[in-house]
Amino acid sequence: MQVEKAKNAKGFHFDFFVIHSAKDAEWVNYTLLAKLEGEEGFKGCIADRDFQLGKYVLDNITAAIKESAKVLIILTPDLVQSKWCKHEMKEALHAKVEEGTESVITILLID
Image 1: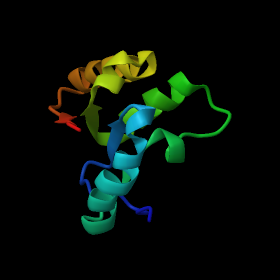
Image 2: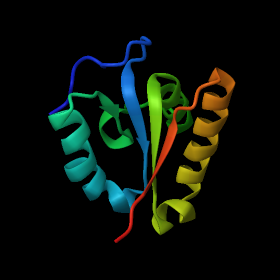
Image 3: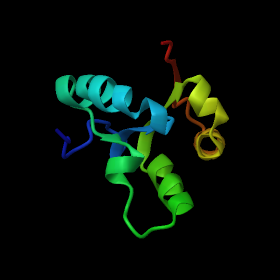
Image 4: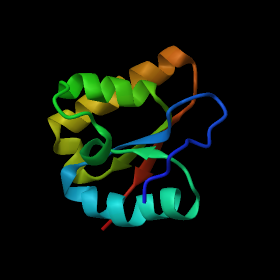
């Protein structure tokens, strides 16, 4: 289930953008999103579902960060080893510092 309208009051298109390793996609899709979108009614953004096809991946990442009220980083060993995830984390931290907001949330996922 995808939520149509974000709940945040600041005008962001998404309530949150999730940065995660592809190896953690099952947990993100079936646990995290089930809770935040399904039960709580927040509107999330994840690459596999919400990135625009045909658009350069770096442009998708930048847009997702700018259009999201919060950024959730799902911290796992697989995430730390991924060059794309490292880039997404750098982009998110830089963008949110520029905004002057405390809107990056790290979730440590332990097997």
